[in-house]
Image (cartoon, rainbow, N blue to C red; front, side):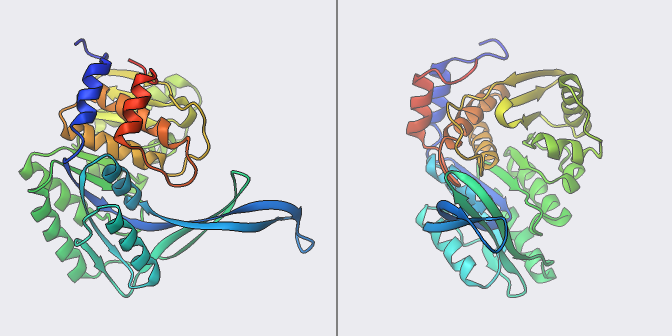
Length: 335
């Protein structure tokens, strides 16, 4: 197979290897809360829509959505995080257990409030989002225990994901412990980064930032044009010594940077209802594909395919092995 190409048979064989792979996720857990309804009038109190609520749902968000995506694809998932001692944490951990995620590595800390993102949606349009959270620093005891647990669980894993939402779980100390543990276990590391930690991830296998995070992470003012973005991607990959960089670009798909080359893979979504959590899908599938021995381009194609599935659903959604296989049969990928 030549570099930069792949076949449906090869992609199907990789998808078939997903079930049973052991993936360790370190990151910020949060609860996504969706309030859905319809709008029939504008409030007389202020120029805002009045939403008649018809449904409320909850789903794991942040690193929890990464875990949900992995579990739906058959992986054995273990998550390391810290949550508050509150009803949101109870619901979140219960939802993760129901999805088959191992949560014994999640610690509770009374000084923290579990992050909730509440989205009000009417007629498939998000009206407003409000967050409930109380950012806080981890206690020394909790941080030490988390670092020790990373080392123990990495030895039993096929890949490691760092899902950084900037809520306090991913710190220089936990990052260093994770990278050290991954090197000892000889497993790939995939990072969904926050700009403030960009340079701490030097030497990981792959990062999956969006364009805004990429510009901010390199402390650069966004410049217009395709060439400026490609130059940025090459600079990130080279400066951070990544095996490859996967830059997610919304409706434009994603661009893979490997060595000195780059290749843009167009989006395969037929309809876009909701982009909530699509980046988590990309991160999860990237790690799962690497754990199965996929090359960077194969990894990018599979991640793009999975993202195309989830944006066609409402809310924080996941893809299944069956859906990926169906999308392949329908020819919804670029090779």
